[in-house]
Image (cartoon, rainbow, N blue to C red; front, side, top):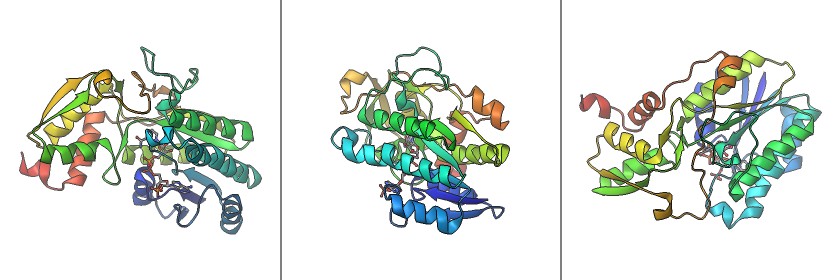
Length: 291
Ligand SMILES: NC(=O)c1ccc[n+]([C@@H]2O[C@H](COP(=O)([O-])OP(=O)(O)OC[C@H]3O[C@@H](n4cnc5c(N)ncnc54)[C@H](OP(=O)(O)O)[C@@H]3O)[C@@H](O)[C@H]2O)c1
């Protein structure tokens, strides 16, 4: 298959580049080579490369900044997915689109199932929810995969920020009343390939959830990062009220993973197991030397 990956320099796109095998022809692009808001450029790319699958890793992901830049966030997270969906429909291609736990209201007490009603609480969440809707309404073949708390060894993310703070601070405060589950971008990339291989070229209109297994707070996550990373930095639990942010964060955004596990026939790693692997990748030799 000819597979187009957009936003390939981001966290997820980079992991897809690492695992891309020779059985497919890959076209890795980012904003410098294919701006997904440029309809003519997207159409030309599909036409020239006879695209069978488009994996859309491109997004506007600055959650707080989106509150001040709703138009730009809408352009990238809603308008561009529509452009990609229309190109997929025209070329009979499959669109694999990544969405977020922030489409949910965050007031649940048990993991969100894929069909639970959405109720975004932030500009970012709203633009991603609208992105899902335009794809669902386009009539193209699609798999929408919602994920959460994504991290990897590249780019900016919570794990890298905590490791950096662990080197420079004696103690930090981290919110302990928001619960979710982290996702190592590598595991998500592998799951996307499993979905693709399982589905092949069959017609599909499905939404999935993928995170690592487990339920933790940001405080639990930070504590584990300091521990695994060997940082001598105390983590103090605080409440959301004590750490105000521009965009409202969901208090509870654990995603139910049963659908993707059954559909793709995969097992999913526990969050801590994957965190250890990512920290080993960020700081090679660190874990061996501390054993
Ligand atoms: N990060 C998270 O915690 C998280 C949580 C839940 C869901 N998700 C979703 O997961 C997906 C992947 O996230 P990620 O963390 O890998 O994102 P990321 O690291 O921010 O990467 C996104 C990439 O898309 C590029 N991009 C932005 N606008 C573009 C455009 N118009 N055309 C082409 N490329 C463009 C970005 O370039 P620039 O860097 O130059 O802007 C960047 O290279 C996104 O759909 C995101 O909404 C992420």
